[in-house]
Image (cartoon, rainbow, N blue to C red):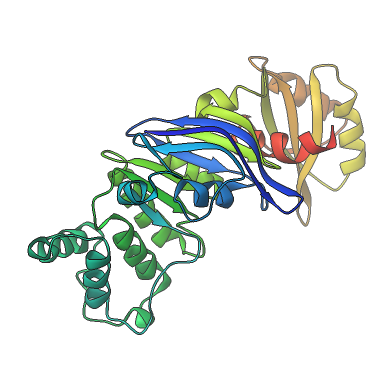
Length: 314
């Protein structure tokens, strides 16, 4: 559905996107992750024909974004990070306006607007001005304008930015419904949202793709590692870190949280090795009181940090 080959985008001497290649399949929800300035938004803007690339090629549904930009725009629904709304317009007025811009035949506009109002659950606000809406409803209107022409490809740049937890769940559920029949590219800083919504994850850092795969595949990139979260009573954090750091079966020890009378530690261990009994005996021997001990698997956040922060230090 989308083919990106050797895409490079420069702003003067600055390289924002550095020779990336990527294929995105029909009906796939792709999570596009990266720190600020990694090249996510630039890549999405090139795909959406918002800006030209410096080098490389991009095609959407067989159409080249440079040679056939009008056909590509017909195939794409785009919700940029800055929601393209007119606050002085009414919701229903705005949707009719967008429908005309999208060249929906006049005889089908009413039905298209009715369908999109139902899909995005806008029935309770269609008579209000956009400027009167909550941020959650504004995001719904933004999604409505992106899909009113029923495009096969949907590009969403930070669609849940600034929303409260309830609004995030509502937008996430809507995206998952849309993903059953469309190709969706979702850019987000909220890793839990990507984990809950997307089928596949691509991580970009400093303009280059550093990871691409199913969520489970990416989590296995930190090969053979699991974690134990350990909360001990008291404040002997330095002694605890030094002690566990000296054990050959523990690869890394970090302080995660310091409470009033306790400290939480993160122990990184070999996958499949159960050290809980040994950890218990070690703490008893040192007269440390265990308040909590929880084994956990490597998360998508761990992968993200390893590739975009710790990887920069290597």
